[in-house]
Image (cartoon, rainbow, N blue to C red; front, side, top):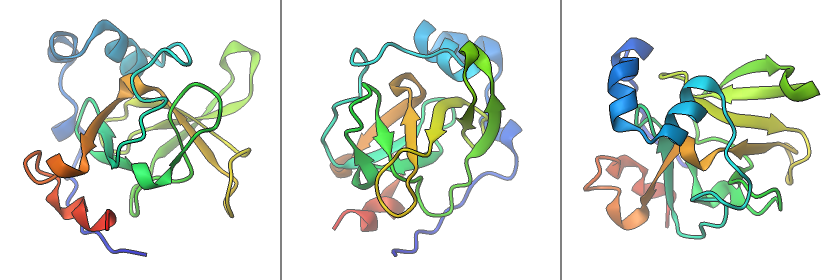
Length: 157
């Protein structure tokens, strides 16, 4: 496993902009997903079938969350991953909405709603992190340095 040095901010408040600022910066869908736990339509979102190598970060705070190396096609119509980046401790909360019992996941620093984690995934962990594209920003490998994520280049040999 590669060791990647993370330097997260000291508090979530430093990375989470005020609601007025977020409404100006995010699209209406991005705001509803990240701030009000909405869900975007399956198969009609930006990253469900993205195959390019790169990093997925929180659209609100920019905090790195997932690598394309851990992305897989779950057939559900949303981007799915087997695990977050090393050292990323996603916040988990019980979610009983829509008549279901599931685990919601939120970004560690900004608390953005990302999606849900399920136990029907591949690999040894059996986890499937099913995310909303609207909660993410994708940074292609070739853009990592110029976008300020150069320390993650080592994840992509």
